[in-house]
Image 1 (cartoon, helix red, strand yellow):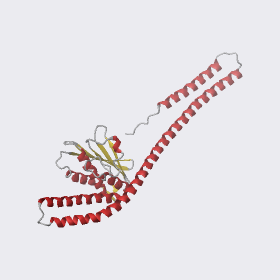
Image 2: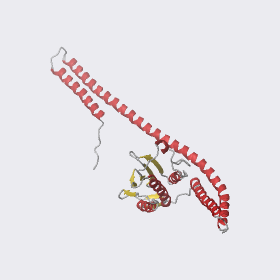
Image 3: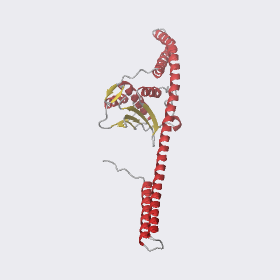
Image 4: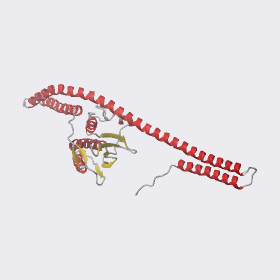
Length: 315
């Protein structure tokens, strides 16, 4: 049903004032023309015309002043909106510059570390095959091998952040990507009791994206939501369309993030987890930027967090 456009109450007041001014001018004109007075007819007619023209002029001035105020108000609002967009763009450019510099450093450092790390890992593998090792020595070799694997995974995250592969765009049905993400997330519960809720808008249009990378981003967000949620809570995965873009939300009802830390969630190496690397969300943020989209985060009014993946419906 089409909505009825509401008229500004101030405009109603202006119209009422203008009508009142014109009505007073008309009544005064009639009284001057009808009632006996000490003026001759030509003088009375001239006075009536002058009074009527004065009333019309006053009404026109009131309307003109209102239109000017409305114009300046709209202009001020528009300038405020433009200023906010400029600020957001400026912050995005600063973030991109920091990430670029950090990415280049990470890539170079990762390659330099990976070679000696491979040597250490290979040496540990040789030592593990030695049957003469006592239990204490075998335990030390296991620690070396496990830590090498952990460091190799960390270096892989560095490289994914520093040089993420270019997206391979396809036109895909988003529902299939969401179903696949939910199926993978179900394996990440690890003994917790977490319920999943799927809310997809009917007749959601296809979207141009890299389905593999989008699934990677959504799965990362889902696993974070699962980790943040206590037993018995629900994690919601929703999707909707509007204003030429698709918005996918991952909503949890966990402990949330302190307001002072929300703006830093996409900074590399910043983490609120005890054993986190601080690269999961920055990598997801980089992927979304390469796809022409955005990744946003904000706290829920009651508890928990909402992460929004925003994609243009068409590139």
